Image 1 (cartoon, rainbow, N blue to C red):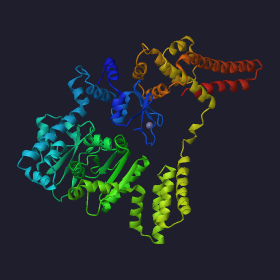
Image 2: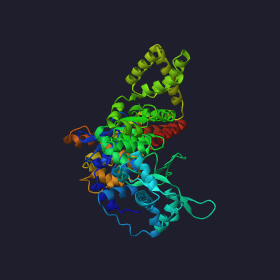
Image 3: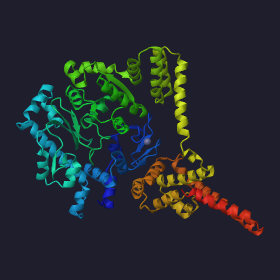
Length: 593
Ligand SMILES: [Zn+2]
Protein backbone atom coordinates (compact mmCIF):
# COMPACT_ATOMS: atom_id res chain seq x y z
CA UNK A 1 0.00 0.00 0.00
CA UNK A 2 1.30 3.40 -0.89
CA UNK A 3 0.81 6.12 1.69
CA UNK A 4 1.36 9.66 0.36
CA UNK A 5 4.20 11.68 1.90
CA UNK A 6 1.87 14.36 3.24
CA UNK A 7 -0.10 11.68 5.10
CA UNK A 8 3.10 10.40 6.66
CA UNK A 9 3.97 13.86 7.90
CA UNK A 10 0.43 14.37 9.14
CA UNK A 11 0.76 11.14 11.11
CA UNK A 12 4.14 12.19 12.47
CA UNK A 13 2.90 15.63 13.43
CA UNK A 14 -0.26 14.39 15.09
CA UNK A 15 1.02 11.41 17.04
CA UNK A 16 2.59 11.82 20.42
CA UNK A 17 5.59 9.56 20.83
CA UNK A 18 5.45 9.65 24.63
CA UNK A 19 1.80 8.63 24.61
CA UNK A 20 2.45 5.76 22.20
CA UNK A 21 5.57 4.42 23.90
CA UNK A 22 3.96 4.76 27.36
CA UNK A 23 1.55 2.05 26.35
CA UNK A 24 4.35 -0.47 26.30
CA UNK A 25 7.11 1.02 28.47
CA UNK A 26 6.89 2.58 31.92
CA UNK A 27 8.38 6.03 31.32
CA UNK A 28 9.65 8.42 33.95
CA UNK A 29 10.24 12.08 33.28
CA UNK A 30 13.73 13.41 33.82
CA UNK A 31 14.57 16.85 32.46
CA UNK A 32 13.75 17.17 28.81
CA UNK A 33 13.59 13.40 28.29
CA UNK A 34 11.66 10.42 29.51
CA UNK A 35 13.48 7.27 30.56
CA UNK A 36 12.42 3.64 30.84
CA UNK A 37 13.56 0.06 30.47
CA UNK A 38 14.33 -0.70 26.85
CA UNK A 39 11.85 -3.08 25.23
CA UNK A 40 14.45 -4.15 22.68
CA UNK A 41 17.20 -5.50 24.91
CA UNK A 42 17.35 -6.82 28.45
CA UNK A 43 18.41 -4.35 31.09
CA UNK A 44 17.88 -3.49 34.72
CA UNK A 45 18.61 0.23 34.70
CA UNK A 46 16.82 2.44 32.19
CA UNK A 47 18.87 3.53 29.18
CA UNK A 48 15.93 3.91 26.84
CA UNK A 49 15.05 7.57 26.34
CA UNK A 50 12.24 9.40 24.63
CA UNK A 51 12.40 13.06 23.69
CA UNK A 52 8.95 14.63 23.30
CA UNK A 53 10.33 17.85 21.77
CA UNK A 54 12.06 16.03 18.94
CA UNK A 55 9.55 13.18 18.89
CA UNK A 56 12.28 10.55 18.82
CA UNK A 57 13.45 7.64 20.94
CA UNK A 58 16.95 6.34 21.47
CA UNK A 59 18.42 3.56 23.56
CA UNK A 60 21.88 4.26 24.91
CA UNK A 61 22.25 0.53 25.56
CA UNK A 62 21.47 -1.13 22.25
CA UNK A 63 21.25 2.01 20.06
CA UNK A 64 17.76 1.25 18.84
CA UNK A 65 16.22 4.54 17.81
CA UNK A 66 13.92 6.42 15.48
CA UNK A 67 10.58 8.17 15.36
CA UNK A 68 7.13 7.07 16.44
CA UNK A 69 6.55 5.04 13.26
CA UNK A 70 9.82 3.17 13.60
CA UNK A 71 8.98 2.45 17.23
CA UNK A 72 5.60 0.95 16.36
CA UNK A 73 7.22 -1.10 13.56
CA UNK A 74 9.94 -2.46 15.78
CA UNK A 75 7.76 -3.05 18.81
CA UNK A 76 4.94 -4.85 17.04
CA UNK A 77 7.15 -6.42 14.39
CA UNK A 78 5.10 -4.92 11.55
CA UNK A 79 5.87 -3.14 8.28
CA UNK A 80 6.05 0.61 7.67
CA UNK A 81 2.60 0.91 6.03
CA UNK A 82 1.08 -1.20 8.79
CA UNK A 83 2.60 0.98 11.48
CA UNK A 84 1.55 4.19 9.71
CA UNK A 85 -1.96 2.84 9.34
CA UNK A 86 -2.16 1.81 12.97
CA UNK A 87 -1.21 5.32 14.08
CA UNK A 88 -3.50 6.91 11.52
CA UNK A 89 -6.42 4.91 12.84
CA UNK A 90 -5.65 5.91 16.37
CA UNK A 91 -5.45 9.63 15.58
CA UNK A 92 -8.40 9.57 13.18
CA UNK A 93 -6.35 10.34 10.09
CA UNK A 94 -8.00 9.02 6.95
CA UNK A 95 -5.75 7.35 4.40
CA UNK A 96 -7.31 6.96 0.96
CA UNK A 97 -6.57 3.63 -0.67
CA UNK A 98 -8.94 3.90 -3.62
CA UNK A 99 -6.33 3.60 -6.34
CA UNK A 100 -5.47 0.02 -5.40
CA UNK A 101 -6.98 -2.86 -7.37
CA UNK A 102 -9.44 -5.09 -5.48
CA UNK A 103 -7.20 -8.14 -5.82
CA UNK A 104 -4.15 -6.32 -4.52
CA UNK A 105 -6.11 -4.77 -1.74
CA UNK A 106 -7.36 -8.18 -0.70
CA UNK A 107 -3.82 -9.38 -0.43
CA UNK A 108 -2.55 -6.34 1.44
CA UNK A 109 -5.43 -6.40 3.86
CA UNK A 110 -4.99 -10.05 4.78
CA UNK A 111 -4.39 -9.19 8.41
CA UNK A 112 -7.41 -6.95 8.55
CA UNK A 113 -9.50 -9.73 7.04
CA UNK A 114 -8.21 -12.24 9.53
CA UNK A 115 -9.05 -9.99 12.45
CA UNK A 116 -12.53 -9.39 11.06
CA UNK A 117 -13.04 -13.11 10.47
CA UNK A 118 -11.86 -13.98 13.98
CA UNK A 119 -14.29 -11.46 15.41
CA UNK A 120 -17.14 -12.92 13.40
CA UNK A 121 -16.27 -16.46 14.51
CA UNK A 122 -16.04 -15.29 18.11
CA UNK A 123 -19.62 -14.01 17.80
CA UNK A 124 -20.75 -17.31 16.32
CA UNK A 125 -19.11 -19.33 19.11
CA UNK A 126 -20.60 -16.95 21.63
CA UNK A 127 -24.15 -17.35 20.35
CA UNK A 128 -23.62 -21.12 20.21
CA UNK A 129 -22.77 -21.01 23.90
CA UNK A 130 -25.56 -18.72 24.99
CA UNK A 131 -28.52 -19.81 22.90
CA UNK A 132 -28.05 -23.09 21.00
CA UNK A 133 -29.47 -26.39 22.23
CA UNK A 134 -26.07 -28.07 21.87
CA UNK A 135 -24.60 -25.31 23.96
CA UNK A 136 -26.45 -26.43 27.05
CA UNK A 137 -23.75 -28.87 28.10
CA UNK A 138 -21.20 -26.06 27.78
CA UNK A 139 -23.41 -23.65 29.75
CA UNK A 140 -23.68 -26.22 32.53
CA UNK A 141 -19.98 -26.92 32.42
CA UNK A 142 -19.15 -23.23 32.96
CA UNK A 143 -21.81 -22.93 35.65
CA UNK A 144 -20.31 -25.88 37.51
CA UNK A 145 -16.91 -24.28 37.34
CA UNK A 146 -18.40 -21.12 38.79
CA UNK A 147 -17.69 -18.90 35.78
CA UNK A 148 -20.05 -15.91 35.92
CA UNK A 149 -22.01 -14.43 33.02
CA UNK A 150 -20.02 -11.21 33.40
CA UNK A 151 -16.77 -13.06 32.79
CA UNK A 152 -18.30 -14.97 29.85
CA UNK A 153 -19.34 -11.62 28.36
CA UNK A 154 -16.17 -9.67 29.07
CA UNK A 155 -13.84 -12.34 27.68
CA UNK A 156 -16.14 -13.41 24.85
CA UNK A 157 -16.19 -17.08 25.86
CA UNK A 158 -17.96 -19.38 23.43
CA UNK A 159 -18.67 -22.92 22.37
CA UNK A 160 -17.64 -24.73 19.21
CA UNK A 161 -20.38 -27.27 18.46
CA UNK A 162 -19.69 -30.92 17.78
CA UNK A 163 -19.92 -30.40 14.01
CA UNK A 164 -17.50 -30.51 11.10
CA UNK A 165 -18.69 -27.45 9.26
CA UNK A 166 -19.93 -24.80 11.68
CA UNK A 167 -17.08 -22.36 10.97
CA UNK A 168 -16.75 -23.65 7.40
CA UNK A 169 -20.31 -22.43 6.78
CA UNK A 170 -19.56 -19.05 8.33
CA UNK A 171 -16.60 -18.73 5.99
CA UNK A 172 -18.78 -19.63 3.01
CA UNK A 173 -21.45 -17.12 4.00
CA UNK A 174 -18.84 -14.40 4.43
CA UNK A 175 -17.39 -15.33 1.01
CA UNK A 176 -13.97 -15.70 2.59
CA UNK A 177 -11.25 -16.45 0.06
CA UNK A 178 -9.65 -19.89 0.16
CA UNK A 179 -6.29 -18.36 0.95
CA UNK A 180 -7.66 -16.39 3.89
CA UNK A 181 -9.48 -19.49 5.15
CA UNK A 182 -6.24 -21.49 5.19
CA UNK A 183 -4.31 -18.66 6.85
CA UNK A 184 -6.93 -18.21 9.55
CA UNK A 185 -6.09 -21.51 11.22
CA UNK A 186 -9.78 -21.92 12.04
CA UNK A 187 -10.36 -24.66 9.51
CA UNK A 188 -8.27 -27.44 8.03
CA UNK A 189 -8.15 -28.82 4.50
CA UNK A 190 -9.70 -32.24 3.97
CA UNK A 191 -7.17 -34.81 2.87
CA UNK A 192 -9.43 -37.25 1.00
CA UNK A 193 -11.80 -34.81 -0.70
CA UNK A 194 -12.11 -31.13 -1.51
CA UNK A 195 -13.06 -28.56 1.07
CA UNK A 196 -12.45 -27.81 4.71
CA UNK A 197 -13.51 -28.91 8.18
CA UNK A 198 -13.54 -27.10 11.54
CA UNK A 199 -10.41 -27.22 13.68
CA UNK A 200 -12.29 -26.72 16.95
CA UNK A 201 -15.14 -29.09 17.74
CA UNK A 202 -17.08 -29.61 20.96
CA UNK A 203 -14.92 -27.30 23.01
CA UNK A 204 -15.27 -24.28 25.29
CA UNK A 205 -13.73 -21.48 23.25
CA UNK A 206 -11.49 -18.70 24.54
CA UNK A 207 -10.83 -15.85 22.11
CA UNK A 208 -7.24 -14.66 22.46
CA UNK A 209 -7.05 -10.87 22.23
CA UNK A 210 -3.96 -8.92 21.33
CA UNK A 211 -2.98 -5.78 23.19
CA UNK A 212 -5.15 -3.69 20.85
CA UNK A 213 -8.24 -5.72 21.76
CA UNK A 214 -8.39 -7.51 18.42
CA UNK A 215 -9.10 -11.25 18.29
CA UNK A 216 -5.81 -12.83 17.22
CA UNK A 217 -6.67 -16.49 17.73
CA UNK A 218 -8.52 -19.02 19.87
CA UNK A 219 -7.94 -21.58 22.54
CA UNK A 220 -10.36 -24.48 23.04
CA UNK A 221 -10.84 -26.78 26.01
CA UNK A 222 -12.70 -30.09 26.12
CA UNK A 223 -15.40 -30.53 28.75
CA UNK A 224 -14.43 -34.06 29.75
CA UNK A 225 -11.18 -35.99 30.11
CA UNK A 226 -10.57 -36.54 26.41
CA UNK A 227 -7.31 -35.48 24.84
CA UNK A 228 -5.92 -33.10 23.90
CA UNK A 229 -7.35 -31.15 26.81
CA UNK A 230 -6.38 -27.81 25.28
CA UNK A 231 -5.99 -26.84 21.68
CA UNK A 232 -4.83 -23.46 20.33
CA UNK A 233 -4.91 -21.72 16.98
CA UNK A 234 -1.67 -22.19 15.06
CA UNK A 235 0.58 -19.19 14.41
CA UNK A 236 -1.07 -16.99 11.79
CA UNK A 237 -0.22 -13.61 10.29
CA UNK A 238 -2.15 -12.06 13.22
CA UNK A 239 -1.30 -14.54 15.97
CA UNK A 240 2.32 -14.39 16.98
CA UNK A 241 2.52 -16.71 19.95
CA UNK A 242 5.71 -15.30 21.35
CA UNK A 243 4.20 -11.82 21.56
CA UNK A 244 0.72 -12.45 22.92
CA UNK A 245 -0.22 -13.40 26.47
CA UNK A 246 -3.77 -14.38 27.34
CA UNK A 247 -5.64 -11.74 29.33
CA UNK A 248 -3.09 -8.93 29.08
CA UNK A 249 -5.50 -6.78 27.07
CA UNK A 250 -7.77 -6.67 30.14
CA UNK A 251 -5.22 -6.86 32.93
CA UNK A 252 -2.62 -4.37 31.71
CA UNK A 253 -4.06 -1.40 33.60
CA UNK A 254 -4.11 -3.39 36.87
CA UNK A 255 -0.56 -4.63 36.34
CA UNK A 256 0.50 -1.01 35.97
CA UNK A 257 -1.38 0.14 39.05
CA UNK A 258 -0.06 -2.60 41.31
CA UNK A 259 3.41 -2.89 39.81
CA UNK A 260 3.36 -6.66 39.62
CA UNK A 261 1.80 -9.43 37.62
CA UNK A 262 0.86 -13.05 38.29
CA UNK A 263 1.79 -15.42 35.50
CA UNK A 264 -0.45 -18.47 35.48
CA UNK A 265 -0.79 -21.39 33.10
CA UNK A 266 -4.39 -21.94 32.07
CA UNK A 267 -7.32 -19.93 30.76
CA UNK A 268 -9.44 -20.86 33.74
CA UNK A 269 -6.65 -19.98 36.17
CA UNK A 270 -6.61 -16.49 34.73
CA UNK A 271 -10.39 -16.10 34.56
CA UNK A 272 -10.95 -17.35 38.12
CA UNK A 273 -8.38 -14.98 39.56
CA UNK A 274 -9.86 -12.12 37.55
CA UNK A 275 -13.36 -12.98 38.66
CA UNK A 276 -12.23 -13.00 42.29
CA UNK A 277 -10.76 -9.53 41.93
CA UNK A 278 -7.13 -10.50 41.32
CA UNK A 279 -6.95 -8.75 38.01
CA UNK A 280 -3.20 -8.28 37.58
CA UNK A 281 -2.52 -11.59 35.87
CA UNK A 282 -1.81 -13.19 32.49
CA UNK A 283 -1.90 -16.78 31.30
CA UNK A 284 0.70 -18.52 29.17
CA UNK A 285 -1.98 -20.93 27.91
CA UNK A 286 0.33 -23.71 26.88
CA UNK A 287 2.97 -21.64 25.09
CA UNK A 288 6.51 -21.62 26.38
CA UNK A 289 7.48 -18.25 27.82
CA UNK A 290 9.89 -16.39 25.57
CA UNK A 291 12.08 -13.38 26.23
CA UNK A 292 9.65 -11.42 24.02
CA UNK A 293 6.89 -12.24 26.50
CA UNK A 294 9.01 -11.11 29.41
CA UNK A 295 9.92 -7.84 27.68
CA UNK A 296 6.27 -7.28 26.87
CA UNK A 297 5.35 -7.76 30.52
CA UNK A 298 8.16 -5.51 31.69
CA UNK A 299 6.26 -2.68 30.07
CA UNK A 300 3.46 -3.15 32.59
CA UNK A 301 5.03 -4.40 35.77
CA UNK A 302 8.50 -4.55 37.22
CA UNK A 303 7.79 -7.51 39.51
CA UNK A 304 6.44 -10.87 38.43
CA UNK A 305 5.13 -13.88 40.28
CA UNK A 306 5.14 -17.22 38.52
CA UNK A 307 2.28 -19.36 39.78
CA UNK A 308 2.54 -23.06 39.08
CA UNK A 309 0.86 -26.30 40.04
CA UNK A 310 2.84 -28.36 42.49
CA UNK A 311 2.81 -31.44 40.25
CA UNK A 312 5.89 -32.56 38.35
CA UNK A 313 4.75 -30.95 35.10
CA UNK A 314 4.17 -27.63 36.84
CA UNK A 315 7.59 -27.66 38.47
CA UNK A 316 9.22 -28.59 35.20
CA UNK A 317 7.44 -25.69 33.46
CA UNK A 318 8.51 -23.29 36.23
CA UNK A 319 12.14 -24.35 35.97
CA UNK A 320 12.06 -23.89 32.22
CA UNK A 321 10.61 -20.37 32.45
CA UNK A 322 12.89 -19.18 35.22
CA UNK A 323 15.94 -19.12 33.00
CA UNK A 324 14.24 -16.73 30.62
CA UNK A 325 13.32 -14.37 33.45
CA UNK A 326 16.77 -14.44 34.99
CA UNK A 327 18.42 -13.68 31.68
CA UNK A 328 16.09 -10.70 31.31
CA UNK A 329 17.06 -9.48 34.77
CA UNK A 330 13.51 -9.47 36.10
CA UNK A 331 12.52 -9.50 39.76
CA UNK A 332 10.71 -12.80 39.75
CA UNK A 333 9.21 -14.94 42.52
CA UNK A 334 7.77 -18.42 42.36
CA UNK A 335 4.53 -19.41 44.00
CA UNK A 336 3.92 -23.13 44.23
CA UNK A 337 0.43 -23.85 45.50
CA UNK A 338 -0.28 -26.65 48.00
CA UNK A 339 -0.45 -30.08 46.44
CA UNK A 340 -3.52 -30.80 44.35
CA UNK A 341 -4.30 -27.12 43.68
CA UNK A 342 -4.08 -24.85 40.69
CA UNK A 343 -4.80 -21.10 40.92
CA UNK A 344 -8.37 -21.72 39.75
CA UNK A 345 -9.26 -24.38 42.31
CA UNK A 346 -7.35 -22.58 45.05
CA UNK A 347 -9.08 -19.24 44.68
CA UNK A 348 -12.49 -20.89 44.33
CA UNK A 349 -11.92 -22.94 47.48
CA UNK A 350 -10.13 -20.43 49.71
CA UNK A 351 -10.84 -17.01 48.21
CA UNK A 352 -8.76 -14.08 46.99
CA UNK A 353 -7.34 -13.08 50.37
CA UNK A 354 -5.90 -16.53 50.98
CA UNK A 355 -4.35 -16.43 47.53
CA UNK A 356 -2.75 -13.03 48.10
CA UNK A 357 -1.52 -14.19 51.50
CA UNK A 358 0.18 -17.21 49.90
CA UNK A 359 1.56 -15.03 47.14
CA UNK A 360 3.16 -12.64 49.61
CA UNK A 361 5.24 -15.58 50.80
CA UNK A 362 6.28 -16.64 47.32
CA UNK A 363 9.81 -17.98 47.17
CA UNK A 364 12.69 -16.26 45.47
CA UNK A 365 13.89 -18.09 42.41
CA UNK A 366 16.93 -19.44 44.23
CA UNK A 367 14.90 -20.66 47.18
CA UNK A 368 12.56 -22.39 44.79
CA UNK A 369 15.29 -24.04 42.73
CA UNK A 370 17.14 -25.12 45.82
CA UNK A 371 14.01 -26.71 47.26
CA UNK A 372 13.35 -28.59 44.01
CA UNK A 373 16.95 -29.75 43.93
CA UNK A 374 16.85 -30.92 47.55
CA UNK A 375 13.58 -32.75 46.92
CA UNK A 376 15.18 -34.52 43.98
CA UNK A 377 18.60 -35.41 45.36
CA UNK A 378 18.26 -35.45 49.13
CA UNK A 379 20.91 -34.19 51.53
CA UNK A 380 23.38 -37.08 51.53
CA UNK A 381 26.97 -36.18 50.66
CA UNK A 382 26.41 -37.34 47.13
CA UNK A 383 23.09 -35.51 46.94
CA UNK A 384 24.62 -32.26 48.14
CA UNK A 385 27.31 -32.40 45.47
CA UNK A 386 24.64 -32.89 42.82
CA UNK A 387 22.66 -29.97 44.23
CA UNK A 388 25.74 -27.76 44.12
CA UNK A 389 26.34 -28.76 40.52
CA UNK A 390 22.80 -27.85 39.56
CA UNK A 391 22.75 -24.59 41.48
CA UNK A 392 25.97 -23.19 40.08
CA UNK A 393 24.36 -23.12 36.64
CA UNK A 394 21.56 -20.94 37.98
CA UNK A 395 23.83 -18.74 40.08
CA UNK A 396 25.83 -17.92 37.00
CA UNK A 397 22.84 -16.34 35.37
CA UNK A 398 22.64 -13.69 38.08
CA UNK A 399 24.50 -10.66 36.81
CA UNK A 400 24.21 -8.67 40.01
CA UNK A 401 27.33 -9.57 42.03
CA UNK A 402 25.91 -8.56 45.43
CA UNK A 403 22.78 -10.60 44.90
CA UNK A 404 24.82 -13.55 43.76
CA UNK A 405 26.99 -13.55 46.86
CA UNK A 406 23.86 -13.49 49.04
CA UNK A 407 22.62 -16.61 47.33
CA UNK A 408 26.02 -18.25 47.58
CA UNK A 409 25.90 -17.66 51.32
CA UNK A 410 22.40 -19.09 51.58
CA UNK A 411 23.38 -22.10 49.53
CA UNK A 412 26.49 -22.82 51.57
CA UNK A 413 24.46 -22.62 54.79
CA UNK A 414 21.72 -24.91 53.54
CA UNK A 415 24.11 -27.50 52.18
CA UNK A 416 26.57 -27.05 55.00
CA UNK A 417 29.41 -26.61 52.52
CA UNK A 418 32.14 -24.01 52.96
CA UNK A 419 31.16 -20.70 51.30
CA UNK A 420 34.52 -20.44 49.57
CA UNK A 421 34.09 -23.86 48.01
CA UNK A 422 30.68 -22.85 46.64
CA UNK A 423 32.09 -19.63 45.28
CA UNK A 424 34.95 -21.52 43.66
CA UNK A 425 32.47 -23.78 41.85
CA UNK A 426 30.51 -20.81 40.52
CA UNK A 427 33.66 -19.05 39.42
CA UNK A 428 34.80 -22.15 37.56
CA UNK A 429 31.53 -22.13 35.66
CA UNK A 430 31.75 -18.42 34.86
CA UNK A 431 35.31 -18.75 33.62
CA UNK A 432 34.36 -21.66 31.37
CA UNK A 433 31.50 -19.66 29.95
CA UNK A 434 33.58 -16.54 29.36
CA UNK A 435 36.32 -18.60 27.72
CA UNK A 436 33.78 -20.01 25.29
CA UNK A 437 32.55 -16.55 24.38
CA UNK A 438 35.98 -14.98 23.95
CA UNK A 439 37.13 -17.53 21.44
CA UNK A 440 34.20 -17.07 19.17
CA UNK A 441 35.19 -15.59 15.79
CA UNK A 442 34.74 -11.89 15.20
CA UNK A 443 36.01 -10.64 18.54
CA UNK A 444 38.83 -8.69 16.91
CA UNK A 445 36.38 -6.17 15.44
CA UNK A 446 37.08 -3.56 18.15
CA UNK A 447 40.51 -2.96 16.70
CA UNK A 448 39.58 0.46 15.35
CA UNK A 449 42.05 3.09 14.44
CA UNK A 450 42.23 5.72 17.16
CA UNK A 451 42.51 8.52 14.62
CA UNK A 452 39.42 7.30 12.81
CA UNK A 453 37.47 7.33 16.06
CA UNK A 454 38.51 10.92 16.67
CA UNK A 455 37.52 12.08 13.23
CA UNK A 456 34.22 10.22 13.45
CA UNK A 457 33.52 11.90 16.73
CA UNK A 458 34.12 15.35 15.27
CA UNK A 459 31.96 14.62 12.24
CA UNK A 460 29.19 13.26 14.46
CA UNK A 461 29.40 16.40 16.57
CA UNK A 462 28.84 18.56 13.51
CA UNK A 463 25.76 16.54 12.55
CA UNK A 464 24.50 16.66 16.10
CA UNK A 465 24.78 20.45 16.03
CA UNK A 466 23.09 20.63 12.62
CA UNK A 467 20.15 18.76 14.10
CA UNK A 468 19.93 20.69 17.36
CA UNK A 469 20.83 24.12 15.97
CA UNK A 470 19.80 24.20 12.31
CA UNK A 471 21.39 27.67 11.88
CA UNK A 472 24.74 25.83 11.83
CA UNK A 473 23.77 24.28 8.50
CA UNK A 474 24.62 27.41 6.53
CA UNK A 475 28.15 27.42 8.01
CA UNK A 476 28.59 23.80 6.97
CA UNK A 477 27.49 24.69 3.44
CA UNK A 478 29.58 27.85 3.24
CA UNK A 479 32.80 26.07 4.25
CA UNK A 480 32.12 22.87 2.25
CA UNK A 481 32.79 20.98 5.46
CA UNK A 482 31.32 17.79 4.12
CA UNK A 483 34.05 17.53 1.47
CA UNK A 484 36.49 17.08 4.32
CA UNK A 485 34.50 14.32 6.06
CA UNK A 486 36.30 10.99 6.22
CA UNK A 487 33.22 8.88 6.91
CA UNK A 488 31.16 8.34 3.76
CA UNK A 489 28.18 7.30 5.85
CA UNK A 490 28.20 10.49 7.93
CA UNK A 491 28.75 12.56 4.80
CA UNK A 492 25.74 10.96 3.12
CA UNK A 493 23.56 11.61 6.15
CA UNK A 494 24.71 15.22 6.53
CA UNK A 495 23.93 15.83 2.87
CA UNK A 496 20.41 14.53 3.40
CA UNK A 497 19.95 16.84 6.37
CA UNK A 498 20.97 19.85 4.27
CA UNK A 499 18.30 18.90 1.74
CA UNK A 500 15.46 18.95 4.27
CA UNK A 501 13.25 22.04 3.85
CA UNK A 502 12.52 24.87 6.28
CA UNK A 503 14.73 23.96 9.19
CA UNK A 504 12.57 25.82 11.67
CA UNK A 505 10.00 23.84 13.57
CA UNK A 506 9.96 20.08 14.10
CA UNK A 507 13.23 19.86 12.20
CA UNK A 508 14.35 16.52 13.64
CA UNK A 509 10.93 15.04 12.85
CA UNK A 510 11.34 16.11 9.24
CA UNK A 511 14.89 14.83 9.01
CA UNK A 512 13.82 11.53 10.49
CA UNK A 513 10.99 11.20 8.00
CA UNK A 514 13.44 11.76 5.13
CA UNK A 515 15.65 8.84 6.23
CA UNK A 516 14.48 5.58 4.74
CA UNK A 517 17.02 3.18 6.17
CA UNK A 518 16.57 1.86 9.68
CA UNK A 519 20.26 2.28 10.52
CA UNK A 520 20.16 5.93 9.37
CA UNK A 521 17.15 6.62 11.59
CA UNK A 522 18.92 5.06 14.53
CA UNK A 523 21.98 7.19 13.95
CA UNK A 524 19.92 10.37 13.62
CA UNK A 525 18.08 9.57 16.85
CA UNK A 526 21.30 9.05 18.72
CA UNK A 527 22.92 12.22 17.34
CA UNK A 528 19.83 14.33 17.97
CA UNK A 529 19.66 13.08 21.56
CA UNK A 530 23.28 14.07 21.98
CA UNK A 531 22.38 17.40 23.51
CA UNK A 532 25.33 19.59 22.93
CA UNK A 533 27.00 20.58 26.14
CA UNK A 534 27.75 24.21 25.48
CA UNK A 535 25.51 27.22 25.96
CA UNK A 536 23.36 28.27 23.09
CA UNK A 537 25.23 31.60 22.72
CA UNK A 538 28.51 29.79 22.24
CA UNK A 539 27.14 27.35 19.76
CA UNK A 540 28.20 29.27 16.70
CA UNK A 541 31.75 29.61 17.89
CA UNK A 542 31.99 25.97 18.95
CA UNK A 543 30.63 24.82 15.63
CA UNK A 544 33.14 26.92 13.72
CA UNK A 545 36.05 25.60 15.72
CA UNK A 546 35.04 22.00 15.12
CA UNK A 547 34.49 22.66 11.42
CA UNK A 548 37.93 24.29 11.19
CA UNK A 549 39.52 21.37 12.92
CA UNK A 550 37.93 18.90 10.50
CA UNK A 551 39.19 20.88 7.53
CA UNK A 552 42.66 21.37 9.01
CA UNK A 553 43.23 17.74 9.96
CA UNK A 554 42.23 16.39 6.61
CA UNK A 555 44.16 19.01 4.63
CA UNK A 556 47.26 18.45 6.71
CA UNK A 557 47.15 14.71 6.35
CA UNK A 558 46.63 14.89 2.60
CA UNK A 559 49.38 17.50 2.23
CA UNK A 560 51.88 15.49 4.21
CA UNK A 561 51.27 12.41 2.16
CA UNK A 562 51.20 14.29 -1.14
CA UNK A 563 54.48 16.07 -0.40
CA UNK A 564 56.08 12.80 0.64
CA UNK A 565 54.88 11.22 -2.59
CA UNK A 566 56.26 14.15 -4.58
CA UNK A 567 59.65 13.97 -2.92
CA UNK A 568 59.71 10.20 -3.34
CA UNK A 569 58.96 10.74 -7.01
CA UNK A 570 61.79 13.27 -7.25
CA UNK A 571 64.21 10.90 -5.58
CA UNK A 572 62.99 8.11 -7.86
CA UNK A 573 62.23 6.03 -4.78
CA UNK A 574 59.53 3.94 -6.44
CA UNK A 575 59.26 1.52 -3.56
CA UNK A 576 58.55 4.27 -1.04
CA UNK A 577 56.16 5.94 -3.47
CA UNK A 578 54.12 2.75 -3.82
CA UNK A 579 54.01 2.38 -0.06
CA UNK A 580 52.83 5.96 0.43
CA UNK A 581 50.11 5.61 -2.19
CA UNK A 582 49.02 2.41 -0.54
CA UNK A 583 48.86 4.21 2.78
CA UNK A 584 46.82 7.02 1.28
CA UNK A 585 44.33 4.52 -0.12
CA UNK A 586 44.19 2.73 3.19
CA UNK A 587 43.26 5.88 5.04
CA UNK A 588 40.49 6.59 2.56
CA UNK A 589 39.15 3.05 2.78
CA UNK A 590 39.29 2.98 6.53
CA UNK A 591 36.75 5.74 6.72
CA UNK A 592 34.45 4.50 3.99
CA UNK A 593 32.29 2.33 6.18
ZN1 LIG B 1 17.96 -0.99 24.12
